[in-house]
Length: 378
Picture 1 (cartoon, rainbow, N blue to C red):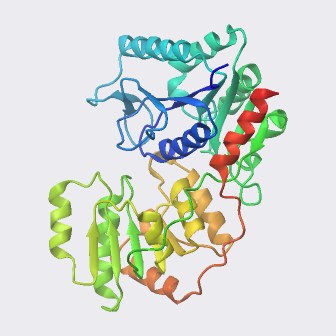
Picture 2 (spheres, rainbow, N blue to C red):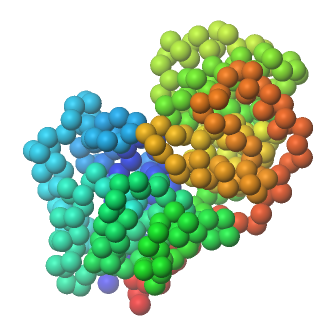
Picture 3 (tube, rainbow, N blue to C red):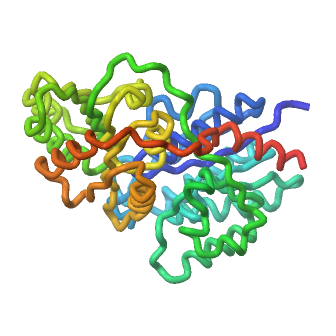
């Protein structure tokens, strides 16, 4: 009998957090002896998924705007029915070629509702397989609030009809699914907490900074980096700053920032040793995405969080507020970011003692692989 097979669907629309988390889980499954096929449907991201899995890239779709109200193709045009049909056919073809023992849907049906055009037909094909594979949803610990009537009920119907497991990638001591999904009690027999999917413990840092500002790939990157550059000029000149702009900042903006940076400010587009740098910094300034917060937990550093809120997003604000309440972070609303306010908040955070990070479970990738293996063999 050959190796058991996993089919993992991941659709990132704006940032790459979902893809990064899924890639860690896919690599843990591969390390456990599974043949893993990761199907991605967003714009290509170098290094994701890892080289230890098979990768099928569907024609990419992106969020039509920051509010996720529509879908665009790789050229920015609204997707057509023909485009959707092509993706649907390619997805089902990839599933049949894989012939998996386990199928994982990242976010769906709790998110990625825009992809129902291809995922509901795939679920129908899965139901006809004999033997039918194990079907699991892969979720972050805090969900986006659903304001439209009927959406939570619709999700419940799909889970009941098609899903065996709901993998919550969190530690229930920090966040529980019922806090952001109202029908959790109805599916409690399917819910399993895996722990947070954090990266490995970082290597000792090659450099040490007082303040590390990371913009990620988000929409507020330019504003945050610009404000941080000016904030550095308002504070003591012996503070050592690291500013990571992310890959999406236009080159002319990067060049202008580089020209304006004083000697104590070090500017980078990207640092592959980001997690390591965090472990040696006094204060991290960043958005409040899942992966960044996992890195902060692992590093044990102080953090000032600026939650992403475009398009009515609530997930980062919920996470940041929880961390602030636990005394693990400061929070600065995106709309209130000015050089002066940022400088004041950074100065205040630097005066606070290093936070006492609680002993949260950060081994979610390995535990997810173990949970799936156990259920698939049951």
